[in-house]
Length: 273
Image (cartoon, rainbow, N blue to C red; front, side):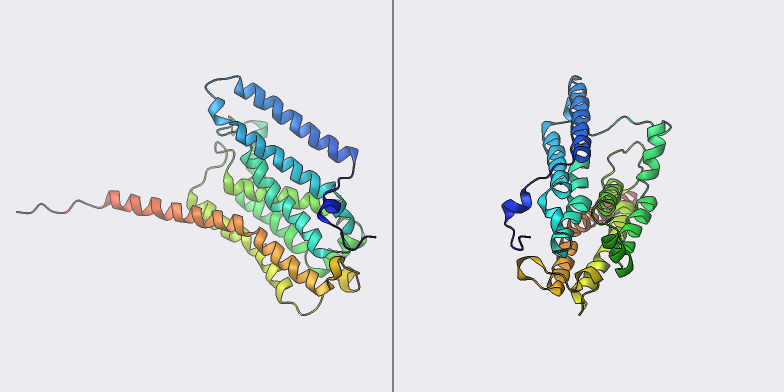
């Protein structure tokens, strides 16, 4: 095995018909709905072309994370493995959700409305996200995922699903079924950042390799297993900064709303005689 892969090596794609077929179907459905939406001149402004670009970039990022040669090096580079997981959890959901049109007409009482109101509920999203982050990053869970090969199949899918739920709760792509003020979304963003930031800090300051499959692993680019673990901590922490930054902006917007509201309710000063 090449232990010094270049960027070109890591970008080389493999072919799994199920993954490629699912992504092609998602793109086809998206473009079909886009063409139908744009046929209505009144709604055209709600789905500009730049959103299509973001959605396609999200699919390409998914393709790289799941179907590239980088997936071969799971046991040889914890840092590279973490890059793939963070792309699926933090980058892909953001691009896909920003690629959706504004003001999607989804009735709360419809079957899809009920399903998405549960999936995008902040507490449901937080529970799923926390379970994925904590269980698969404690040594017992992670070791088991490597041994049973779920690290290559199940875990990336769970990161993608839970990351989409978290970003969906923060961005509110379906406002008709996602009521919530900036303040609630901002506090939720802070809360959702805690599990991942805690794991990242643990990796950064641990003095020994925490995961058995990496203890004696031959790592890429002449890195030691401990260096791989520490780099993974930095990768996870940096990947969580965009969501944390959005939470701060939402809290600031909420505080501005509060200050403006209190200013409007303040009684006028007494007239000077």
